[in-house]
Length: 260
Image (cartoon, rainbow, N blue to C red):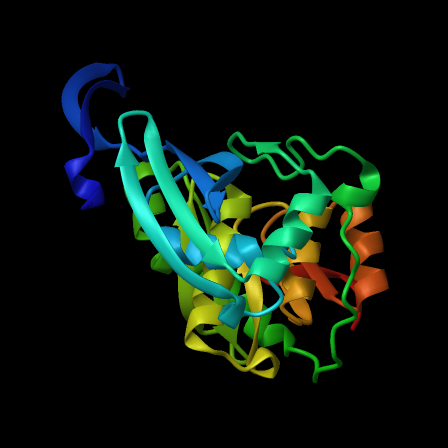
């Protein structure tokens, strides 16, 4: 779907005058993730790059351990939303059933339906050590990030997650109304195409919660940067997993909370 097709009439008040205009709005639809015929999660998401979402969510939530354990994704349109029928290895599906986790999602929700703290905070992977990302690369990513968010430019309503190289150039970016979904889409895209985890870092348009740190550590990504703040638990999880956490990226400044 072309985002520019999703327009709505608006009465805009500007400098004392009313104008009849059209604006592009972000689409948000219910997306159900169904594993081997069994519904597992329902979330509100932007209906683009959904195969990337399936791969990224499956790996970052430890449903599969590697992309080869996901055999296929079939998208089905329904009046109430979109169903992602995901086929995974039988051994991983058996493990999934043991977890007894039912995620009834909503925008921005990372813990919906988790039955215990042990289920919410997944076993952490200690990431490998990489050479520090230069400060100028973090600044470059922050300055140019918005140029790579076409849907945000049109709607002002979506988050972005980007993979940047060691110079700060944005190489891949995914967008979604949910910040967790945007990150899962990015991670899924990287997993499907293959990437060198030493060659760059993840940059987010949102704040950093502990789930975001869990997700990048699951992919052995050692550096996570964002325009907004981290939570205390995000810092603690980053310290335990070895993720270098950088936040409050602004022009000519950023804060480093943990070092890999």
